[in-house]
Image 1 (cartoon, helix red, strand yellow):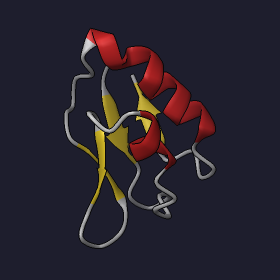
Image 2 (cartoon, one colour; image 1 turned 60 degrees about the horizontal axis):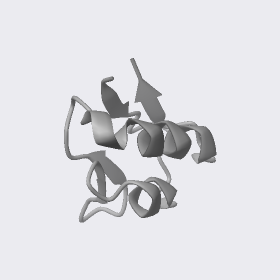
Image 3 (cartoon, helix red, strand yellow; image 1 turned 30 degrees about the vertical axis):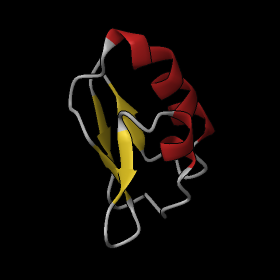
Image 4 (tube, helix red, strand yellow; image 1 turned 180 degrees about the vertical axis):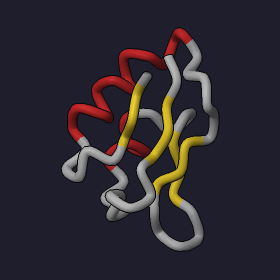
Length: 62
């Protein structure tokens, strides 16, 4: 699974960082960033949950 953040939609709520801190972080600007492009198998469920719970639908999975 691949992951990226839609920078135009992210508002920095940080839910993704709470649910999957090994894949997401908050930048110095206060918005989420994906630390990896390819999600480790062990983190796929947490990343899918983060995408589903993102209020801005800024997490793009493929």
